[in-house]
Length: 212
Length: 212
DNA sequence: AGCTTAAGTGGTCAATTGACAACTTATGCC
DNA sequence: GGCATAAGTTGTCAATTGACCACTTAAGCT
Picture 1 (cartoon, rainbow over the protein chains, first blue to last red):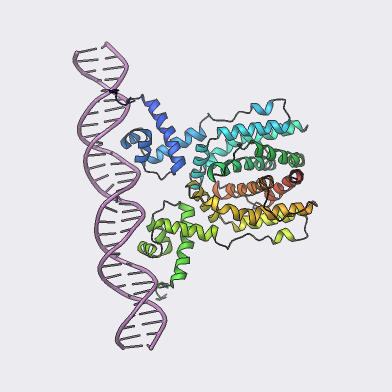
Picture 2 (picture 1 turned 45 degrees about the vertical axis):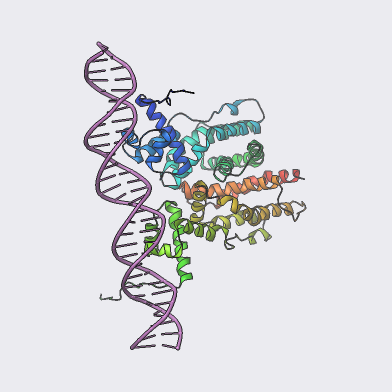
């Protein structure tokens, strides 16, 4: 009975640790509730007083910026390009790569990204370069190699980028349907994603060849 | 000089007219600023006092519901399926149909829809049936006919629906990139959309044939 | 013109919200 | 143990916000 030990109050964390904790939790809350959620609610979700948020981040905007930085602009979080380089069939490699991207780009990330974009926070422009380097170019180069096209060391042409964006849009839209529209995918989206890759691969190489 | 005629104060509109005006303007404001915008700001954008909003709609939620109803659940606003039935080449017909959809689904509509979905307003589920009837099935049937497959009078199978959804996702993602991500498309998105349709048509018919 | 009625306004209230100053206390170091 | 310092809290303030009541006035009818 007398389990008198009071709740294990974890107080007085070192600043770096607390800061990371606040940013992580705030990301979830912003993603779910939007950036207009009161700072008091964020603090409560963090198990901390509202005033402490202001000790760590001088303003609500600064907290938002810290969240976006941590989630989208820091070096961590690039999807693993390993699946692209196996000796499996091309379609399988690309599907596996994108399945990794969809898993890594968590629900929180998608919600945050869309909310930030809707609210004019200029995130997509800042994120654009990373998208090209981490996702679009690796995919295009993989397809080119598989079809005997020469792989240049330069940035994607506009046309190549759009071809890659078609598949990317399909993958992101799958995630939007599940996470934002709340469409149920009882067996995950692997089957649908594989089909998308099949269809895309039926037409994309010819388009790529056209691009000089 | 003495254009002494004072500002043409349009006051005392008939209720139906005023109501429509409020809903239309509120849709724009919600789309731009999100559903958390103060009712006072909406009223100001309408050129009306905040109290009047409460005369017409008993609460903020009721106003939001009226906006979503008017934009997504009323009978108006179905995209024109005319372009699907011309005697132009298949790719051109589908591209033209979707260009119409992208133009009709205005920026305001896309923003509203995403915001509503993000905020858990359950709009996608309510809108789903209309999407099938107005867009996905017409497209699939057009492709089937062009490829000599029999067109049934029943609803789409799950597989057919996903095949259509692939193209739909590409089109919506184009709009998202322009409207939400604010990516510039100097020459409109007709060129990219046409390319998407080409690629899709290279693989989709084979997938459709598989679906029995 | 006079009157009725619906359209629209001004002002107010309690609750909420971003921000912060003053205060308290846990924790590591000697 | 004693204590310096950073970690965390309490309480407060002005501005904002959803809601609404009492009041004013334009339009149509006769």
